[in-house]
Length: 434
Image (cartoon, rainbow, N blue to C red; front, side, top):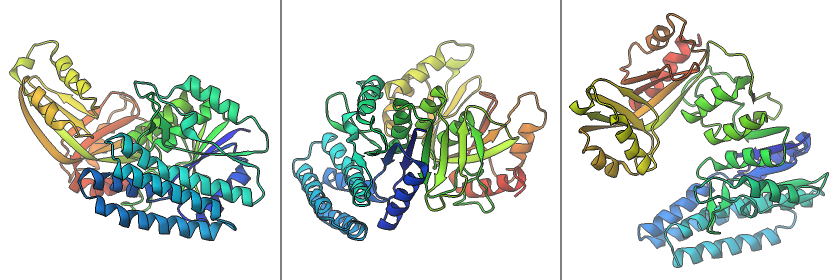
């Protein structure tokens, strides 16, 4: 059985956790093991880039000192002979310092942010080797390559990864997140890209299963950080998982779903800290509960467009969408009336430019600090009382927008972020009887 296992930053965040990961890949018989950087590393590397951008290079040294202590502590506790990895760590930090001093916006940022995965995977591979395992460290940027449109070159990935993973009784260790772009530069697949990497590698090696290991026992019916008495969902469909992942379920990156769904590869969500827990199995088929789960997505900005030119006009929405397409900004929710359009975005990087273009179409209003609440389940449009029951669970919270009817799997509502926690708690009580 061919398995691709991906472990997040917390799972490899210490020497003790790396030992747990090694035990897991032995027990599971992993073919390919995909690792994130040790927890906290990517945030620290991003901070280094930001310090250089903001003209504060003096802030770099304390961050590197923190990382050096973190990785040294891990290596000395994990490895019998850490000398080779210590040398590699020195080379990594020298490279980061070089990129800081010879900073090229964009290019240097990507090089700096790739170093966590490279160093973490090298340490883990060295540990397996010391334990007498046959382990091979693969360089992900050598086979994970993106095209000019940003999509991964699957032909290249399939060919190169298959050629490098043909030996039996071997553990192949590699990095998530990082890749090479079409210019031949070190790049990455964005936050959460390690999950996506694992899914694509699963397709490339014709895996029987892709496993995502984190620090929680599978996908829960609600956010356990804010709500008591949540429970893990043991089996769900790809479509339900995709809705929850897109609308805020942190355990799984939305991009992970599609490659595995298309190729019928089951995805299993497991807990590194409790490997015997069953976790969540995601497949193409599964029973649909009336209410499966709820997720919340923060940092939502509402854009309202008011224009009398909408009235009895065709082509107006096309012009609106073209503005967002031009600025490569996706829309989460949209509602319309005779003379207005309200829509939401979760990335306001280009908001000022978007507003300037939209002003040619009408009057613009902006509202920040909102959250999307997504309830996933059997949303059969022919069932009476379904919407009333969902909205009734929030009868003390103002709802700004509702999206329902786009599919038979979800109902989505927009509320102020200050009301999010109460909303999740009320839904848990009213819809899940908890």
